[in-house]
Length: 281
View 1 (cartoon, one colour):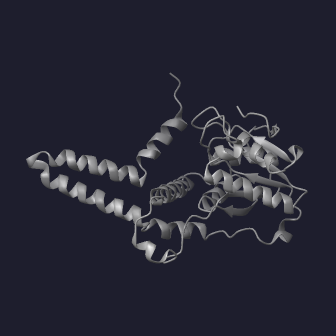
View 2 (tube, rainbow, N blue to C red):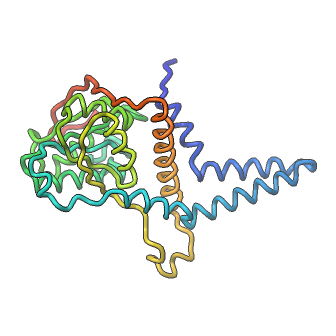
């Protein structure tokens, strides 16, 4: 049996998400409360689970943390500062659905936001090329192929698109970008919440990105009016995203204490874009 460290880490990460932790605490609480000698402990576990579920449902403190992460970098509005840039790099974010759906319907919301932002920038900066990054993660589909196919369906010319189909993590993406682009400045498109970690990894790899964040998920306090009194069904997704990014930043901070050397470029090649009607692998 082939050991895939990426899948194992993804499984562990899924178990550590706030919503999963709350459910595990709830199950442990009910199981423990069944024993008279452990009933007090079981009650505390159920209370902790309920409290965590309420925090997740109402977005506290995850919504505040999301806005702080997203506020570190602002949308790219002044294009005069990037007229000489020749590359727009779009980081991978995953996909959903089955092969019978069109590419834009198979991208998850984060990927779709990134593709739309890249296409917008490319139309305003027609001398640029778009490099879609992202390899196979949880199935056999290559993220970069789906993203590029969606961009082509939006009118981007195939000769203006390249694919980096090997990297599976953000750190691997930066190594491949270094191997393809070198140290030339480029526009980096990713989710606003992901941008702080992506910028740290890019700087560690010796890259010079210009951030262009998109897909802002945090909402201002009181924006929903009286609806803020009710829990939100999508709140667990926000909590998971915030936890993922904070854990990643903490890991980078910890690893920087042991190594401060810039990363080297990886020998990652590029592939041409497929025609819009070509089926991704």
